[in-house]
Image (cartoon, rainbow, N blue to C red; front, top):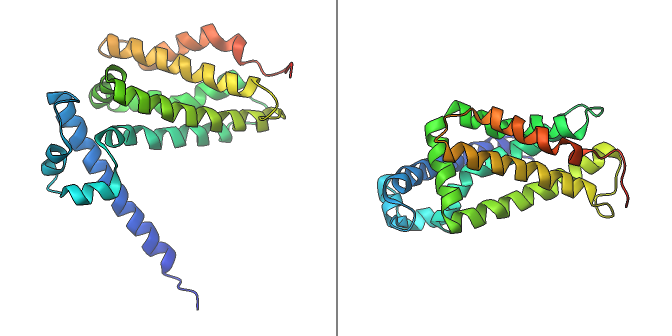
Length: 208
């Protein structure tokens, strides 16, 4: 017999898990911003939210994972946004619209985003995890671009290169935004970067 309540219960359980993850992530960001990455321990993070280390391990493997978790949802949204763009839209504006998922986060909560971004870019362990995430996003974005343009994602280089160039442009803009203490709108910095890279995002011809 099918349990009609199974899916709702599963959704509620996942929402609760997500709330705990977010609570841990916010506590971690606050401590890391005040104390620094190396000086902050997992024990301090769990103590800040009244949780045991054992419970922490159910959600995250390390303190690096806690911070990078804040990026995971935005990355999934970015790929979904790219997939939802009109089929006849050229790659450059489609990619730029998709990256608005990240720039809108900077605009919505600039202080916290600035803290998180500075931590990630200036901490080698976090930057490595961030780049690992970017690699995953690049692969997914390349597949989306290939489907949109009718290219073979396995045989052609251009979709992967276009996705990589777009993400590199975003990272360069993010670095400038952090270095300026958020004084220049992130959207303007990404627009400036895309003005420079747009020719490289043309997938109308594929030499492969």
